[in-house]
Amino acid sequence: MRNRTTGRELALKFLFMLDLRGPEVRAELGEFLASSRAPDEAVRFAGDLVAGYLEEAERIDAWVDQAAENWDLRRMATVDRNILRIATYELLARPETPARVVINEAIEIGKKFGSARSASFINGILDRIRRSRDLEGDPRVDTAP
Image (tube, rainbow, N blue to C red; front, side, top):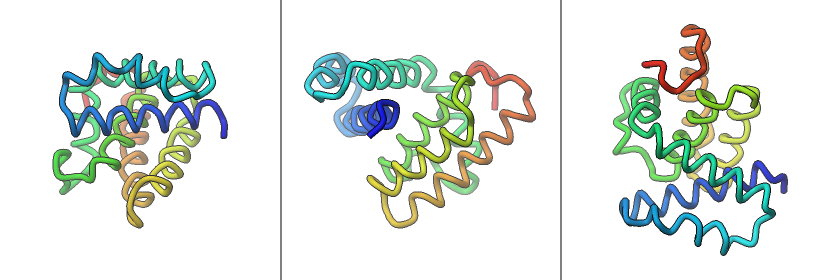
């Protein structure tokens, strides 16, 4: 498995744990990543994704919430919600990674960890976010949805 894929999966697992256990889990990120036995590059990437999302959580959640027409962020499956958070962070704050790569990785992770409907749900929402981002002309996270 590629390092970035492994990093995204680690980030998903940590954000899932954060969703279930609450904000006090944030202090466990270093220990969680160290115990993963993943390659250093994957661990660094996962740490960057988690830290980036946490720093911009309100804005990223607003992007996801707006793109998820007729879906409330809190009612989404925990796996899907966190895949969307990671991928949205990448789409908005890491323009060096092509959008098609970010979306494809999110879909594949959704197939692996989510439900039978996760892949199409994730694809639809991330495609809306990508199009909105492209219309804004500015991929930074601080651009309002």
